[in-house]
Length: 225
Image (cartoon, one colour):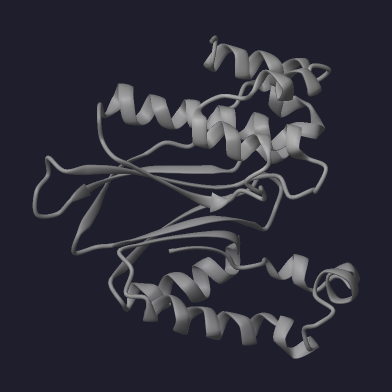
């Protein structure tokens, strides 16, 4: 199960109320109302793995984690840098144990540029079967840049994320299966979708974004063909 549960900070702005969600009654955007419905729905799925995006830090600690713990789910949380929300991954304790956790470490060059600060939100965990320790799985959870015109930023994010996941699932734990969840903010016609689906971009698309030198180098390095 994967959901963007809409952080409270984004639900309470005038822009959210009048432009993004004008069809929602004000009470339906209130945190208390939404989180009670969320807990009920998430518990009802009886899922072994749950990946959530836009999780308020306080909601994770005071609401979601205790509620889902009662249903046998253990939670992991990674907050975004200089934000109050982040990513949460829950796994069923009687089926999985946390073997290791691998947050993406982006270069200082990316992190020092304000344009790329939103790249630092990837939660990658390796879980191990409680009944058969030889069985492991890599669970990745991410939230790509939201802006409709941010396709080039999302392309950087997904290239780096897939490279990191490949390192975890091929180098650190060879041949383990991967579950990659998240809010990708992308459509089937986007470069991000194409990159995930085929491992590369069509030349015509690369030419369109040639002015973004960093993106081109990232794609070329991962897909020299």
